[in-house]
Image 1 (cartoon, rainbow, N blue to C red):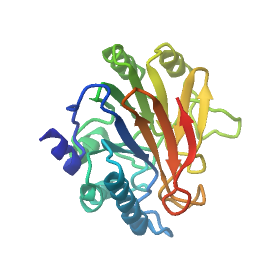
Image 2: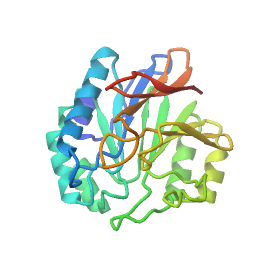
Image 3: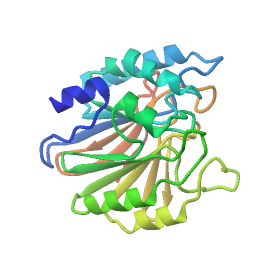
Image 4: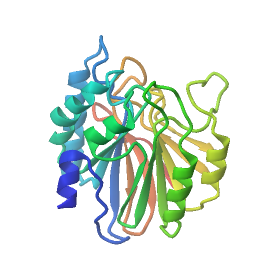
Length: 261
């Protein structure tokens, strides 16, 4: 019942088998629905079709849409939910980006949960941390929320943190990232944090590191700039607990930048 509700509305579900049954998640970001001069309706139709095809080929436990769902028009969030997300054949969740401009109240009204939340599936935890606000500012995630969530899941073997904007600026020219030293220090103190998943930079579809932390980017499936293709990223944990992640370009090469964790 919970899983069915999640597939229809994106609301949180925590039911699932214990560890050892395998886990498969898709991450897609930066659809920018409503951006003028782009084929945003076609882009959304494609990502929904691709994800459903992926699910039929090898089932996905759920999908995460990691920010910039719309382009500066929060009123369109309901349109995306009703006309696209509800066509998915698996549970799905969403996290705000800097172009969503959604208040916490709006986010709850549309998706049924807060802009910061967490969930557990098959003995694996996912911490969804907001990195923007209704004005579109780049902000560090709420460190108290992160600390509470990390402590809640400290006995869970694998924890993944999802943030639209990464908390580190690797290069001087990357001023569109946010340097959050206290957040990085906190995360690096938990050995069960296996990776972070980010959107925001449409041109990145690779893995980067900060100390012992792995940061995975998923390119984009919409918007007016970025990688030459639209795609999404897969996270897999097999029955033996081995973790891998790879990028997919459904329009051409099926697998890009595979990483074994």
